[in-house]
Length: 155
Image (tube, rainbow, N blue to C red):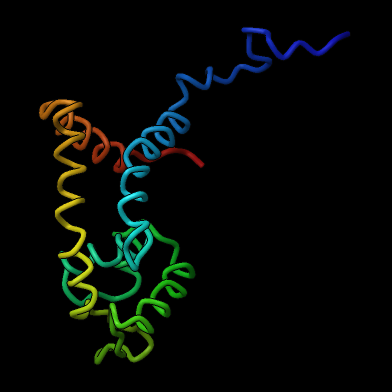
């Protein structure tokens, strides 16, 4: 029996990849993040550090668990990222007064400067995407993705 890789029928009961939600989300992520990565390639930060700076700029000084959740990073990864960001002067950390085991992270002037230096380009990327995709669909997509986060999926 010869293996025919050109068969149009999947060998399992899984949905076709062009209609698979996980794959569609990954493809959409790449559509959005490709230009962001390109923008950040000339900056002192990568996309993970950019997200951390955005979260801290928006939320003020925060504990690492909150940052990890809001920036969509695993806590061990965030710990390594924060070490380099602190060494680069982008953020500072201090022990939490209420719980000395927790650390509180704050954006520093150098971190704010990165956001200011690249914020215009980031806004232009969003403006371009909204114009191409449509304001109404853009807002609906954000609403639907927010709703999806609240859905409990059996593990």
